[in-house]
Image (cartoon, rainbow, N blue to C red; front, side, top):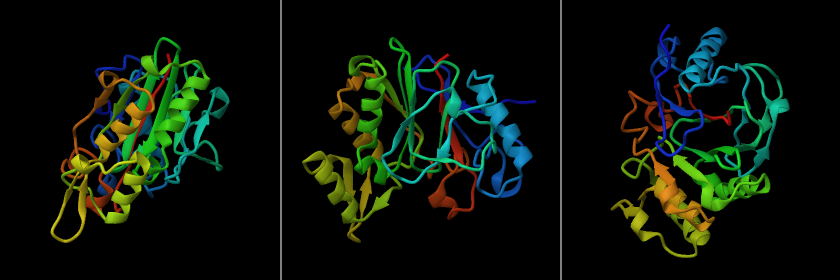
Length: 258
């Protein structure tokens, strides 16, 4: 059986990866590597997709931490007791980020245009996985994740971060209320990070906004990797909510302290 095709960061050496659409067994609108457990796909296919995806990232365990993402800023500190198999529990944690110092505990978050953010302080042995759409970014979810990592012994100077495949400036059209939210968050107008359109909308570079927020939280620019792929432009490679109108599978991103 083939493995899932994954994308990785050159900065992080711990087992990790960002999924693509290929290398799975799902069919139809979920073809082929759907990792969403609430999209209506066949359960057996999703379980096999997870086995392939985790294996491609160098992870052998079948259990991982995940939850119900609510576009908020809640970051949970978790351990082995929070891990589950796909479809393992009826109750899901309501969180958009996870941090752990426990070895052998994969942290998984889901996206389909929003930003997946993976972070690791490999000297302290602390990792984080964060789902960061514009709402979560406005609420400074990355700052909460960095703070949670520091509480477990990480240091800003040693944290390496990767901003994964997500919708790019080329495709992310937003209203002025979103731009105003980032003006308030950053305390300045991030005019270099958006383009104003004739229709009054804006094309926003959310990945660069998140990088700026990470630097404000104490990370070095040299320790922040950005995967340039736009999920909407590359809709044949990645799941894109905007491109499919919501009829889609889900991407997953994972990181684990070995």
